Amino acid sequence: MESIDVALENPGERPKVLLNFDGLFVSHFEGGTYQLGAIPAAEHQFSIVVNEFQLEGRPEDDIRVLISTSQISGINIIPPNRRWTFRIEQAGPAPAPARPFYSGTIPNRLDPPLDDDGPEAKDLRWTLSLDDGMDFPEHGDMTPVNGLLKPIISFKNGVFYNRGLIRRPTIFRKREGHERENLGVISESFRANLEDINVGGRILLRDQGGREILNLALKDRGSYSILFRNAPAHEHPSSPGTPSHFPLFYSVFVPGYERYDLTTLSDGFPGFPSTEMPAGGRGAPAPFRCGPARVETPLN
Image 1: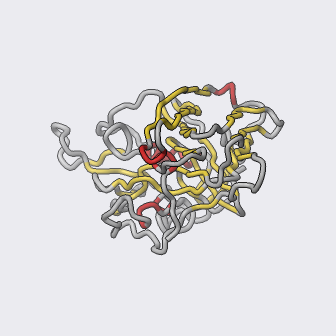
Image 2: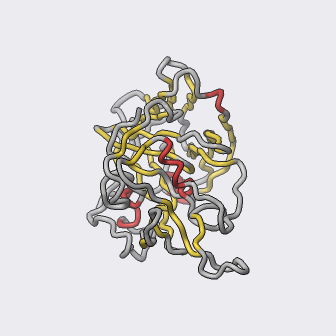
Image 3: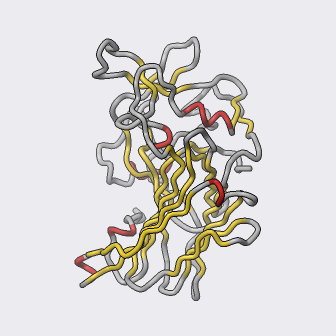
């Protein structure tokens, strides 16, 4: 079984880079490129946070000290060019191209693995799929609304995999006028591990006009954690009647037939026993906290 050890948990001398993703994103993988598009929505803000660590002492001790934190945020970093490219540039052999991690077992949302750290649980297919007919069979063909995703980032390197499964509370999919259906277990979040990185290499994030958004030199014994986030600055607790975030996906992909929403069952709201709850807010599964939805269509 191929290894997808988390970069920052894998001691050693070479630079290590871990990418984390949190928020309202839609993704598409094709031909060595992983596309990720941020969906614009009220109260949501796109940002990038870079944490740099330095390995102290012996590599096997894995003692890391945070030496810097920087953040890029705000809508001003996106116009006029909303298409960005993320890659590693270094002397010597080029890093491996981007790829999703698939285990030898196709995920079954109603029969998930017990071990969140095993390869089956790290399969990227635990993220929701909008258009393959499995998670939302009545969607039909999904028509993209071009020009709305800001930005669209094409990752040229990295192994992309699931991180954590939401098992409780039970998540249901629901169409208007129909009984809810048990959707099952979904992804909590996802991340990527960058491989084959050399000292002196650089992480470069540029827009289509060539403007540098991020230029990070990779140091000996350095570890880097980069968070891409598209979420509200302040999360609000869910309460009966508040909308979920799932319909926000329909602003950029329009189903040919029916639309869905995600709900859970409330537990502990006085006067609302077994009431349907939106799948959102702190303490409950929310699409913007569960990683992106996947589509088979390239992002535009």
